[in-house]
Amino acid sequence: MDSSAPLVLVRDLHYRYEDGTIALDGVNFTLEQGETVALLGPNGSGKTTFVLQLNGVLCGTGTITVCGLELTKQTLPQIRSKVGMLFQDSDEQLFMPTVLEDVAFGLLNQGSSQEQAVEKAKSALEGAGIGQLWNRAPYHLSAGEKRLVALAGVLAMEPEILVFDEPTTFLDPPAERKLLQLLRSLPQAKLIVTHNVHLAQQLATRAVFFEKGKLVANGSVEEIARRFEWSYSDLPADLRYSAQRRF
Amino acid sequence: MHHVLLDRWSQGASPLHRIEARAKILTLLVFLMVLASTPPDAALVLVTDAVLLVAASLIARLPVLPILLRSLVVLPFSLTFALMSWLAGEPMRGLGLVEKSYLAAFGALLLAATTPMSSLLGGLAKLGAPRLLIFVAQFLYRYLFVISEQAQHMRLAAACRQGNAGARRAFGFRGAAGALAVLFARSYNRAEGIYRAMLARGFSGRFSILHHTRFGMRDAAFLVGVSLFLILARLG
Image (cartoon, rainbow over all chains, first blue to last red):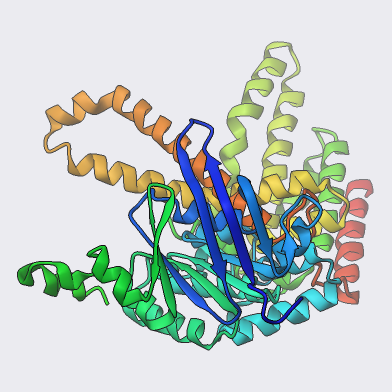
């Protein structure tokens, strides 16, 4: 793949849910190498639906090219190895009986041998700072630990692009800080679906804004947050303090 | 519901907990076959089996009384058939049915109480049980915690809005049925979410299972030793 070519190229993407709701309406988007882009927008604006298209979990009409490969049925396994996705609810992502088996799930699907899968899974857990949890059952973990295990499961597959859907939901401030540090240290290009402008400011080099299934704006996080009044600094002073305490 | 009792028991570190799952599953299988072939009037064999199970519980450092009580769960079923045998003029057969089903439940409970669910399912998979069955059991067990927690939250939310006994009565059956429907819908949504998460990590319809335990000499010795004891007790 040409090193200057975009990692993700989306053209005229449309998606309609089975009940007829239009979720994406002609979205065009580009993710360059090394970029971290925050996807902002109200609930139901199409952000999550959009990222689920990038590795073919949902399939709309339009063209999607990932790392130079056009998304088709044939390229799906390769693309799923290149796009790692961290879901909003870790309980949905951690379905295997133990942490090690869960982290190895994607590796075995990629065709790794049993020994390679164990080795890589343990190494990914160490990398996330949770090597000691390998034999635990996911339902015994805290929300922060679950999120890190889910992240280890994604990183073990060595993806080129990372997609995070509301990565800090359900996390307490120390867990949020730990995750933030870890995310910042990852070299991959990232897409972050979030309502958390503070998180976007910390991680993203650019932001886009979704509204009613359309990508309506593109710019710096500050610019987008100001333009769409998407920040707690726009709240009246008496409300601002309690809202900012979240961070 | 963060911990169920059985799950906590299975996390122990006794010699019985350390035996590989396959050895325990196969031993249980031998035990069930021996039990099934024991005549109802062979009281000594049944007592020996019971003593063996109690001794195993003690070795596993499990609380014997709660296990004995939990094993009673099969009695409503076996008692029904025992009653029918008794009415048909075969009281001994009925009694044997009750004794055997109770001991079988005790043995199965002991296996579950000394083997974490992940190892148990892994052991079954390695013994050739159908993968789909294993995964259904695994998902059921995994999400039982999540769904029951969700149900508890819903119950708490409903209780917070009831206020007094009158309102509680009004909520009653209709409310419970509605809550169940909501729980079902949420579980369905969650199942879709899980499937998406599986697809995102390259799932293509074939389940792969990680084998990371080994069947050693100690496990083989356990299997052979206990099985021989059971068979000799039955024959002797």
